[in-house]
Image (cartoon, rainbow over all chains, first blue to last red; front, top):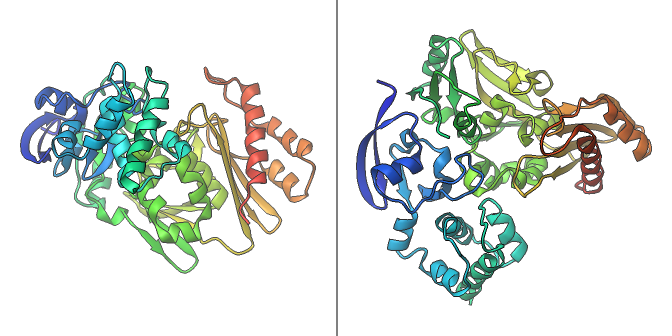
Length: 158
Length: 273
């Protein structure tokens, strides 16, 4: 039965066991089986970044990873990042700067931005733009998102 | 779209992985980082009967400094390469190129071996291998063999792999008489290249490999010779006429040829010292 795989993983700090179809994407598993709908499904080929989440602490595309490949891994979705307070400062800055309109890209944008902060990214606007170039936003024109990320870096470095 | 159904297998050893490839008789594909293969499956451009996930083959992951080469395991991720001190010191071309390969979230999972085995014509890694004169160590049912990058890429998504897996890549350590250049033109940072080039200059000889321009990463021997003879740039660029440039929705062959020339000029201008 290699078309169904038994997996056990940790999602936002909780142990999860499941039997999943081999073709099921990680982000679909999280949304449909675990009802964690914070990670969004956009392009399904790794271009838009809406499904960005963290696996063992690294940002990855949830649509380019199979649920089967998450076996034994530690997954943190935007729900987990919000709950453990990791994204709180970014969320506040996004609100303050109006760095979202429809909100579809926001969970992925926050996860990507957090990856940038955690790897010691600088407040250089070009570097921030380059980093989030893997996340599409069709509302804001990115200006306010860059402002928000810049703000957090400047606040933290004081 | 979602990927079509397939068997998912996770072998515990390289021998078991090779046996599985044999068992599926060409209908199975190895799964490395999946950052190009998964989109192709979601687009239904690829529909393998089985995916053989190489994640547990720890011998395929690592960077080893040998006397005059760096040996890189096929399953080593771009993120690991980017952060590795030996790679930064001994393969300067990687430091120039890696920031252009997609984005952090992709680089955390995408692997060097996966990129070479898939042989996407717009990917950076095949061109880097050609420019660096790398050797590719593969293993199959009939044992192991070593292929030079020049003999490896046969066409669009087509390689010399014959029921084999890539085990490691051997890259010569940079020498003091070498200089390196890289330039890539894209619609958005991190996208696949519309045109790009990787250059290794050794004294006055050149290896220049273009990507994103034709059905595979391509060297143009006459263009390299023209660079060596220090010809003026117009006659160097004239040798691009021999390339069968790609026409697609993003750029037609005329535009691509022009962009390849722009990439070459900028790469030459930005050569390492």
